[in-house]
Image 1: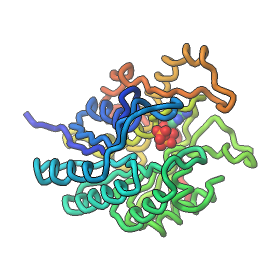
Image 2: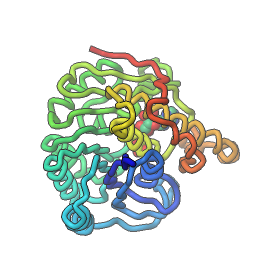
Image 3: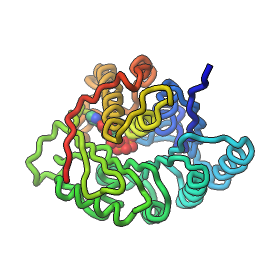
Length: 324
Ligand SMILES: Nc1ncnc2c1ncn2[C@@H]1O[C@H](COP(=O)(O)OP(=O)(O)OP(=O)(O)O)[C@@H](O)[C@H]1O
């Protein structure tokens, strides 16, 4: 019998309660046939979105030793992919990124980098991390990066207001970070710019790949009227799965089809989470500062059956467009 499991190193945050970071990525990946080596960069009681939390951050020496002496030189593990998310300090971001870059180049491992900087106009890391991420992206070999709109704007130094500025931001990105092969901007909300009379019932998920960052493709996706924690971590985990299916299954041939399938599955999970949370949403309406309900915990366990679907059976439900 052929062992067709794949092996991933997932370097992300951990919460004891809830589903963000490694907790959002591990279960879906395991369910879809991956051996997940999850290296937790922090251990917090819960997502900071709850308003309060306790816990601790691991330091760069520990994280470095676990990867270098433990997993790579100790056990000689060969990974099919490495994903990096939240790293808790400037030091750990710098040293772990260098280590992962060297390893990925030496062993030809695809590196999926989530440049965790912030969301909705706000930085939630030290300002210095922006400089470090810029440095990493301009000097390293990255298979795929998945910034959200705010992160793309921060990394390219320009606001994304419409298709024209989005196009320029992809061009700027490629000029500044030529070693990054693929970029997917996970959710662009043109209605955030109140001077634009765009409809706010949809998101745009846009992507471009080397060598041609002068053109990009995008899906227009219907918005669920809620703010979810962990959706980005879930989406990048599912993307990895769609990009590297087991050899015996039909191979997902294009970035567009991998994005389309990952979006479909993400949305089914978010929709089910929304439905299952609706009762408590009704009893806990959005606060005065929020315009939509804040759903802090994905209902991943209740969505287990959704995760069983074979990659080739997942439809691409959203319209795909291209800008040249
Ligand atoms: N309210 C929503 N309605 C529909 N889709 C959503 C919604 N929120 C997130 N998504 C989907 O999940 C994907 C990833 O979410 P998002 O872009 O918000 O990630 P993120 O900002 O990195 O999130 P986080 O870091 O909080 O997990 C998006 O591409 C989008 O398709």
